[in-house]
Length: 146
Image (tube, rainbow, N blue to C red):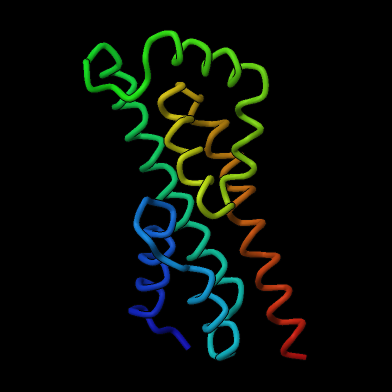
């Protein structure tokens, strides 16, 4: 069944879930998988695309914040920002594989922007993490259905 509105809704909830907004894309995806009325691969693709693009928005906001680091209101003191950049240079970009986690995942994508993570690497790691999470969730859901 091709229900365009359903896919737009799934995309929107997945996009919002990658932001600071409280949204549960996993619950929506599981519900749609349990209904069994839509192709699994399309549901996974739509949810993953929405979630990755939401994380990309966080990265872009972080890049914009980084340009404001000389402002008094900037949340990190220059010394702390330099320390964070050193730590991130050592192990930081691998932390993006944890971007799927609740609570810490969204700030990680924002920090990656502040610390100027290259876009190509950001997209590769976040796409792996976010899509991997939805794949595992779909596998577990569909296994329970059988």
